[in-house]
Length: 134
Image (spheres, helix red, strand yellow):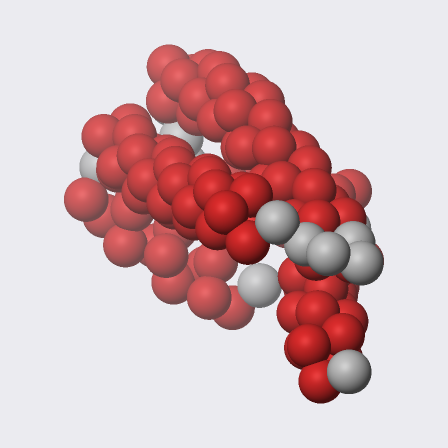
């Protein structure tokens, strides 16, 4: 009986964070905030183009990683909800989920470093300051 409650609890922990994460972001509002910040940086046409291209590529990969993470979380929850869950399978899925999360974190850092290359030192400092305010 205790194992059943533990499985339900773990399933809850796996599902709730992903549901919360999807609800708290409004893409249109986020894009408007980014555009407001970029307008204040006095970007050259070249910088503007590079940032736009970077944002498109970065978001595509980030979206794919998020979708992969969501699918693994779902698969983990399904396995945890089985009457007799396969511990080996659960550990394998969990391992894959950790790897995907690490890839997502690495991708985020790579994106920051790429933006850092495009902007001047002064622009980047102002960018960080403005992003904190928004």
